[in-house]
Picture 1 (tube, one colour):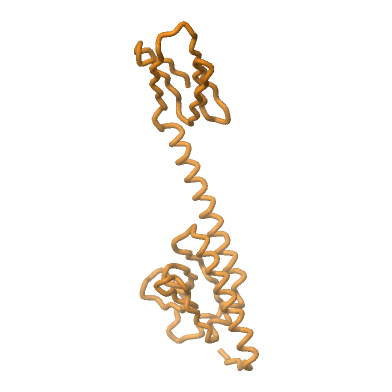
Picture 2: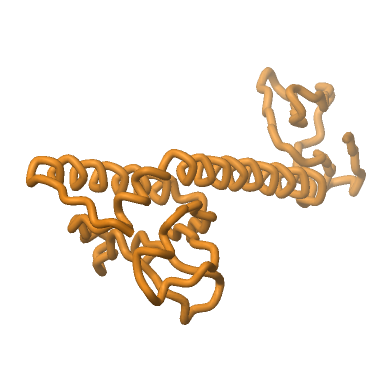
Length: 201
């Protein structure tokens, strides 16, 4: 590959672009929906930058160790780092411009699209998993049982169970006082004195 020379001002622009892209990539990681972001990185001509680069596909990875490119799925394949993560989590950027960085910048828009799709898919999957879990909670959670001891009286005690917005609401009225129980589960009232049950679902 022909080596293109850049002026000091050219290099400052490229360094700023690389730094901006690294910040952009880190913002995806900080969303926190994936422990590791792993996407294909189309990098035409990248294998010509080093003699030991192969024609294996390159992947962009963002994880707890940093932001880097890797060839293939084998741990022994080559890597090219843009930033390494310090123990406190802050990134140390590598902004010295090589031909690899320029190729990466020129193809960043496509790589970013792959990341956005990956993040959106993960968010959608997470929401679906939480929704399924909530349905299981609502379906199998133990019923609410309230035991009541009331003195013998000629006054009538009323018990009413209604449903609002998918929740059960039990209302016990006695002596001018109302007690409301609100739950996602079923409600069971038990008269402890007479060992009788009044159950509504």
